[in-house]
Image (tube, rainbow, N blue to C red; front, top):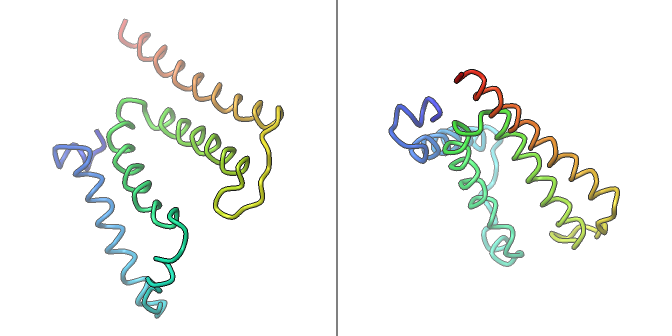
Length: 135
């Protein structure tokens, strides 16, 4: 477990603490920038995916707190990058979120394949090293 998660007794308490601290940091920044109130009416009329960032962010922070101790920092970040690349390629391919479509091709698939291969190597190296230390 991460230090805050271990001190609090569960990874999700660590994640909640992190998100609350983020809120406490952002609020004064909004005040310092004299940001106007959010245009919730406009946002409510926007596409559904405008609202998933908070959900995905909470899942990410909670998942990071729960999974990083098992995978290690390198393994976790390798998985994050690989996941982001797979999703980005899908977003590009289908032209989601209002961007121009960029179809998947062999070169792009090979690039993501190399990233996924890197994830496997990072994890394999971690488990091999752990096994050697245990001997």
